[in-house]
Image (cartoon, rainbow, N blue to C red; front, side, top):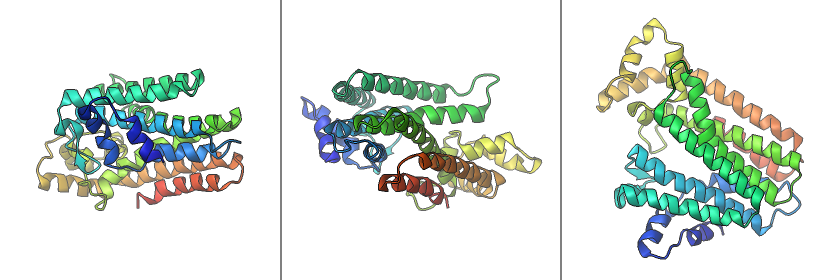
Length: 306
């Protein structure tokens, strides 16, 4: 149902806009945000409300729209295994299609009432501010690690928090349950992104070249910990991290040194700690299958790093 309605929401008056707007949707994805919306709705008296489905569409359309903009800013060649929209068409088309999808999400959320509009607007503000903060980097005197954690919370945690919040709200859950699920969404969303930071270094099985973020000098939890806790024996790793890693040999050396560094285990421990904190929030929820599913998310975020 969600897939069909996403494609329907992305349809436009012109064939070009429709094709471009449906491009990333048709490439697939985990649909983590709408899934969290539907799970959170189980804690309200009306989990099958059509407003819950609308909320799920709103958060996924917002997410997909942001991907169009991200790919232009990152000059990404591919998205979900397919050619990125800006590579298939051009930057201006991709940016405008992202705007078109944001407009579709705004139109849908208007049907959910003024409070839902306010929630969506506040989330969009955080998404944009997070992207700006990531683009300009930490200011003078800012802690780079704290800056990264704030970027992750704004760019990723905020929309996942809203996914849970709108799901619970549209199903009629009480205010306390809404607040709890919103906090859970924020925490688990941040944790998933931090685990991706680690997977960029350690995984050979995701289809993504290990060290992609490292090569592009994108700050991640492990690299920021290396810089913060640098030891004399880290001189070569730090040199590589600040150098051109376009060659496979230099990238492989940097990845090998980083994999052997205590920062990776430190990062794993931090992600595990945060996942445990998210799981602990669930104890206050009714013992439903949906609560078990949310707890399993906390387990998954840890096991995917192994």
